[in-house]
Each structure stands twice: as structure tokens, then as C-alpha cells.
Image (cartoon, rainbow over all chains, first blue to last red; front, side, top):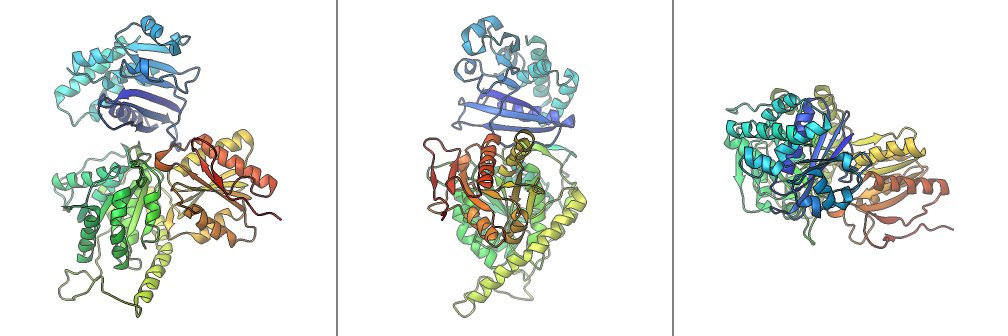
Amino acid sequence: MTEIRWHSRAGQGAVSGAKGLGDVVATTGKEVQAFALYGSAKRGAALRAYNRIADEQIFNHAKFMYPDYVLVIDPALAMTDDITMNDKETTKYIITTHLDKEELIKEIPALQGKEDRVYVVDCIQISLDTIKRSMPNSPMLGAFVKVSGMFELDYFLENMKRVLKKFPQKIIDANMEAITRAYNEVK
Amino acid sequence: MPKEIFELQDREVWDGNYAASQAMRQANVDVMAAYPITPSTPIVENYGSYVANGYIDGEFVMVESEHAAMSACVGASASGGRVATATSSQGFALMAEVLYQASGMRLPIVLNVVNRALASPLNVRGDHSDMYLGRDSGWIQLGAFNAQEAYDLALCAFKIGEDHSVRLPVMVHQDGFITSHTAQNVYPLSDEEAYKFVGDFKPVDDMLDFSRPVTYGAQTEEDWHFEHKAKQHKALMDSRPVIDKVFEEFEKISGRKYKRVESYMMEDAEVALVGLGTTVETARVAAKQLRDEEGIKAGVVAIRAFRPFPFDLVRDALENVKSVGVTDRSSPGGAMGAFFNEVSAALYTTPKRPLVTNYIYGLGGRDFSIEDAKNIFREQKANADAGYVTTDIQQFSGLRGPKLGFFQTKRS
């Protein structure tokens, strides 16, 4: 069982990101779960989204988890939200930030001592460059693909095209570029 | 016939709402009258879009309230069409009056209930308050524990309710957000398989048959009311073998087997948790872990058909365990949990009469974790070892603040 917790603000696409990831993972024959825990239901409010991935049917319906991956797609939430809550000795963090890794960890005491498990990528800037608006969910998926090694990038891109098929071609292309860039830039 | 073909994969990732709406599409529901309410809104919203986009040959009726929604469903069903809708919580409460009309008129309407707490305080999340509110309404009530089951049971619901020996409305319950907004793998049937399973709607005494005029909802006072209600109750009780038969037929086409009472690891269980909805799947994980980690012989009994209440099957499932924790996800309002009372009544008629305690939990969507389930099992194990109930008979699980509980066993 792989468990993932997303930290996001409503409107940044963590719920769609979690569902999109679930959709692609399911094509590999695995069982998935994607759900969210909303606070007050308005844009900008902090929310958490979750994925579970397993080889067999997932029976656990609790929100509670010890995450294997923590994906933070809002730079400020990395500072203000409890992103290390219920973490494990192996939990990996992928954090959206314009800072480099050392600068970021200096700002977040809870990440100190976990340097080898922290990855940074500027999903906001990547989405501004490619999708032309702040939509950090797609780039985060690219970074996750790289860090987790769960898929080949090409396999993921092909399947994401299917997930996004209701959108115009231009938007699909921009998302593919965003995913690819984040895959290459996460470190 | 629908003009457009909906593209389906063998394996989809759907949430419970989407899954239920796909069942409505595949059953080719003729009329859906609905008033939207969180968290069930997407079911009726999706049906509306299927109609508008030509995926279904049906009619979406916009109404001014849930009372009107169910009233329109009653009219459409009495007229001779396949009818369904969805609601939750306050909407369900507003429908309550008409629920009794629908069952009394023996109309096989399917109602997707996405379980949600009742205000006040206002809360959009899942608990079973609304489901309990329907428990005396004369409807068949089936419970789904995940999105797949919300889809499967919705298809079964039409076939059960519309069976001419049943002719009763059917609710299909799923847990608000926990099922309705959680995407999971769902393996749908093809449109052809699904429709062939549900079958064409065959009306009985339809009002649009002008060659044979009929009256619905007539007045009966003390001369006949009692006989009508008794007959209705008997029909509900007699639906049990029909439910079993429909589940068997569904297994043949889907490979997925449903039972009115589902037992997990009960063969040699010493202690058990009895529950409804998603809780039972989480408890199942806890039971397995406890067996492996602590040697506690734990099992789970889940009620699939809440109405007609499977009194005999509950008894069969639990009569050999020593201690049972019955979980109620609804504020008991000054009594023991209603579900606890029903399970206890069944167990009272067994020779060994296991110990039974009541857990109120998960109100307003409060998380129910694997650890919460384990604690319930551990307390049952302590009861089993002691030979009496070592805790308060009614406890609150997952409540913040001081421990809350009521009543202790009388021991001489």
C-alpha cells in the first residue's frame, strides 16, 4: 500500500490531481483511492487530498494515514500547514517552492534532518510558463512520477492525455509540457 | 432509444456519485424528478446531462423542493414509468412524508441516498441519521460500502423493487463523501449487460392505462387501514427471497456476490463488530491485523439489507461469538442506538446470548480509523475473557473530551 497526502488550496487542483493520478495508476492494474478533506468550501482555503494505491482492493476508508509521499502544491502551506503530520522515517516530500532545497529547509524546522527525503520543484512557475495560469497540480504529477519511479514518463503522459481528453488540444499539450518540465526539474 | 452511445472502459475510476449516476443511465430511467443537495447532487446532475446530451431517453423534472421531487416521482411511477432520484440529509427529511406515500402505494421508485448528518448543527458530511429516518417508511434499504457497490446495488434495486411479487420502493445508501466523493476502481457492466439484467419496466395498474382506471392513495379508516399496512409489511418481509435471487443473478453476470448479511472472518470468530456502510470495510482491515498481530479472533458482520431487517441472518452470523460491538453512526437521541437495539433483539432469541455493547461513532463525518475499530475489538475481547460487559453498555468512540458512556450490566 502506497499512501499519498496532498497539501493544497481549494482551486489549485489537488483533488483533480489526486483523481488524475488515481486514473492513471488504475490503468496499470492497481487498485486506487482518491479523496479529499475540505475545510470551508471556498477558493483559497487549505485542503488536503489523499491517494491510496495497492495491488488488492482497498478496504480502508479512514482519512487517517501515515503517508509515504507528501505533495505540497502551495508554497505558503509548506510553511503554515503541518506537512510532517503522521510522517514515517521513509516519508518523501515534494514541495512547490521558488527557493532551493537548502533555503527551504532552513525555513521549515520540521524538515530538518529529513534532507535526503525532501525534493523541490517550482510548480507555480512551471504552470505559469506552460499552462499560462497558476495550476500547480499537473507539474506536481510530473515531479511525483520522477521521485516515485512508479511509471515511465512516456507511459504517464500517454495516459494523462486520455484523462484530459475532454479539454481542447492546446490545454492538453500545455499540461504535457508542464508534467515533462517538472519531471526534469525536480531535485 | 438513446441517440448517443456512452463510452465505457472495463475499468473506471469513479466516485460513488458517478457510479450511481451511471447505473441510472444504464437502467434507462424514464423520469427523474430531483432537487439537488450535497453530497448527492452529482447523481441527479449527471442524469440531467445524460438526458440533455442524448445518452438516455428520459425526462428530468425540475421541482421546487425534495417534497415536490418525491411527489413527482410518485406521480410518474403511478403513471407507469421507471422512476428514480437521489437525496441526502435535510432533503431526505423533507421527503419523509412522501416516502410513506410511495411505499403505501407500492411504487417501485429507486432512491439513491447519499447518507449525511441532519442539522443542527449544520453539517454536510456522512453519517446515518437520514438513513435511520427512513427505517420505518416501508422502503427496502440496501447499503453500499464503496463506489462499486453503489453502482451494483442501484442496478439490483430496480430489479428487486419492480419484481411483481415485491412492488416496493428501494433506497440504495452510500456514505456521504467517504463513498460519494472517493474515487475508486469500478468495474462497470456494458450497457447491454446492465439493461438486460434490469429488464424492461413492466407496469402494474398504471394510471395511463385508460382502459382500466385505477385509484392510488385512497382513504381507508379503521375498517381497512390496518389490513393494508399489514399486507405492506408482509410484502416487505417477503421481499427477502427476491433480494437473494436478484443478488444471485447479479453474481452470474458480474462475478460479484452480495448477501443481505455479509460476514468476514466469522467462521471461528470470538468477538465481532457489527456495522453499516464504509465502516465495515475499515473494520475488516482492523480484524485481519488483530488476528495477525494480537491473536484476537475478530470478525465483522455487515448489514447489506437494512430493511427488511435480516433478523434471522444476524442471529445466524453472531450466535457463536462471545461478545459483539454494535456500531451506530447516528445520534441516538436519548436511547440506545437503534441498530444496537435491533441486533440485540435478534441475539436475545439465541440460546447463548452473546454480550452486546453499543458504540456511537462517526457523527457528522468524524473519521473512523483502523485503530478505532481495533479498540472496539479489544474491548470485546476483554468482555469475552471476563464473561461480562466490562465497559459502559453505550459508549462514544472517537469523541473528543471526557469519555462519555451510559448504563452498566446488572450483575448479581
